[in-house]
Length: 257
Image (cartoon, rainbow, N blue to C red; front, side, top):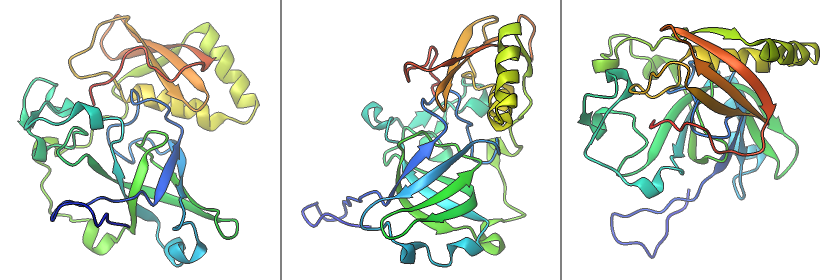
């Protein structure tokens, strides 16, 4: 952590300690909270001068970590005093500090991720493999802390308007003939993990709360692919149309987060 001595009193400037390498290449489709899709994996790559084995000594004994990060693609949009959380249908406004909206006065996020493995390949090459990811590729990380079950998990905590976990099977997912063939090829190539990830991302229903138009097509950019899908004519259904090699990172429909 570094501070800029030229800043005004009470104003702090921090340098990222790491960057996220994520399966998610655009914002639309990313799970709205960490841990909802266990198959969502990536790595946290430490940056100089923090990319040294001593900086993560002892971390292998923890199953989960707290990751403090910057909503770097929300910086230009500023903030508002009230926001419309997806959990309230995108219609009811609450105070920004009563939400996890990325459009904040200080656009800092906090995620608890499962630590799968420490990768230490000598001085200057240190990374953390994580799962349950909800972060965009290239996200700057400000700090990493171990998750402590005895104090971080509070059994009697109240969840306000989000007291229940969101449904991870909100949509029943089926595949077109083309998508079924593509998934079959991936499975034969040993990429069952990617097939499960694609299906679970859509099952979570990543559409904005106010945008439930039947048969509207969407794209999710995951790894090196564009996952094309559409909502069904009936509520609660979705169809994967195609999984094509990605040539762009811009989604067809962007989430309002």
